[in-house]
Amino acid sequence: MKDKIKVGIIGTGGISQLHIGAYKKLKDVEVVAACDVNAQRVKDYARKYEIPNVFTDYKELLKMKEIDAVSVTTWNNFHALVSIDALKAGKDVLCEKPLALNADQAEEMVEASKKTGKLLMVGFVRRFGENAKILKQSVDQGELGKVYYAKTGVIRRWGNPGGWFSDKKRSGGGPIIDLGVHMIDLVRFLTGKPNAISVTASVFNHVGMKPEVKGINKYYPVDYSEYNDVEDAATSLIKFDNGLTLFFETSWVMHVKEDYLYLSLYGDKAGAQMEPFIEYYEEKNHYFTDVKPLVDPASYDFIHNFEEEIKHFKDCVKDGIKCLSPAEDGLALMKILDAIYESGKTGHEVIVK
Ligand SMILES: NC(=O)c1ccc[n+]([C@@H]2O[C@H](COP(=O)([O-])OP(=O)(O)OC[C@H]3O[C@@H](n4cnc5c(N)ncnc54)[C@H](O)[C@@H]3O)[C@@H](O)[C@H]2O)c1
Image (cartoon, rainbow, N blue to C red; front, side):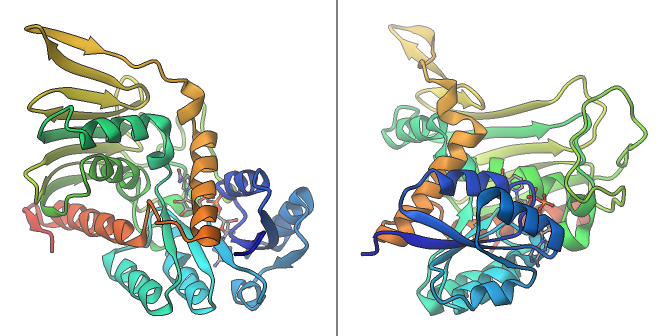
């Protein structure tokens, strides 16, 4: 077993800041190389984080023999290409969500991981929050009984990040693939990873990006532009092979009073909700009873979750422990997302295979 693993980061934009922040906290990791197609951006990043090797072509980074693992934090359209090349170059890979633009690409990635025997982990970071861990334990221990219905949503009144996010060629889609991927994954993760069997969805394109809106805080990604050819919002009903039905909704732009995020599970013994807090709805001594565990909010904030995710990736690479977020789960999600887009187009139920 090595004392230290060496890591490269491919794509040095927004989310790579959280990857490097988490790697830097680990004594047994050395980040030795960074790559971005934007030469100035990667140069600044390498200077800021004291990374000795800088590339603008990821294939050159992959030639570095001493690199054990890479984080792939590029636009979505490069996830498959870069991850497959990295696996073939003998590196273990942590690829950001969504695993790919679609299920076909995701399938090729899973195949490449199997063929090379290298790890491909997908960045489902919400799984690593303490709130998710506690609720999963409750479900696993049968405290909710049979979970037959779930609801989840991420709704933004105005939250289209623009740039590559709203350029379908590079992102694969809007809030469904950007936000929905996290929430649908979390429901699958919490409920024992059932496979979807059918999806009925509506995908909305009525409002547009609304760059002219004033008076609100806006998030701009590093390469902001107003090009937009992705959906505003979507709603869907997803049925799983264990009898679970999931209602899912999302928006980047919608005329709603305020933003909200939720995840609710309904079992025959109890219900629960999380995001951000966990609360259980039980029955005790013939009274309906609400139970709210006291959980430190710092144990499920964004930075904490990334630190846990990156530490887990390192443990997988260095010590060979079982991966909690394998590429197969990324593929299962891409099948669901493909079906949501397909059902939105046809107006009919789509059978997921
Ligand atoms: N887990 C999460 O909660 C979370 C949050 C935000 C973003 N993400 C994901 O992280 C990825 C990056 O998002 P971001 O917000 O950091 O975007 P970003 O635009 O800030 O950064 C992406 C970077 O990748 C670079 N890049 C693009 N193609 C490249 C290539 N072929 N080789 C090298 N560099 C390349 C771009 O120049 C840019 O600097 C996306 O897949 C996104 O879905 C995940």
